[in-house]
Image (cartoon, rainbow, N blue to C red; front, side, top):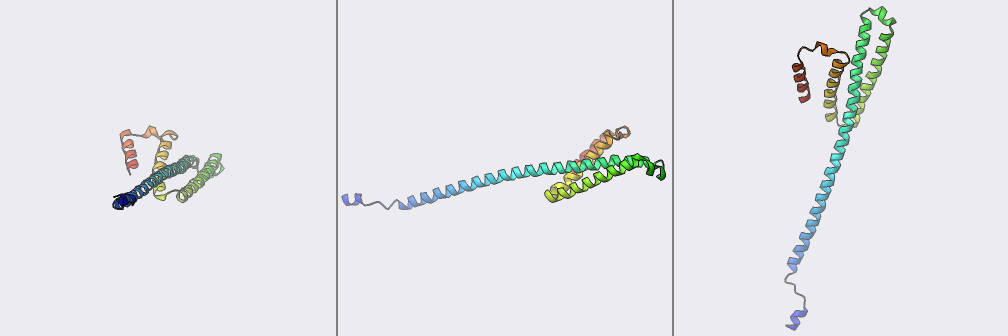
Length: 164
């Protein structure tokens, strides 16, 4: 018996090896979970940043489009007096210049938005925001609210556009 007590016991060695392997597997799975969580957090941050960028570019292009609508009303009003009088009118030329400036801004914004943002997110957002800003501009600036016969219909149309 004394001799046996001096020698190391190997009968539990398989259990020890299995425990060590399980411990390593747990560590690996914990590291994978941590990396997946950090990847998910990075994706959320990236998505939030991209969404802000999409909304910013869409707002610029939509406001440019609305300003073009107002400028078009200006040069169209000058054309009511006839082409000769319109060419001599400061309102006509100022409206045309403003229209062209905002046209260039809108097109540049669209190109930048398509280049820097996800197109599948940018184009629908740009279209919907463009419609809403143009409608709001028409209602407020051009006083088209006076001509609205059915506010319920306008609200239902807005929901339809928003819903896609």
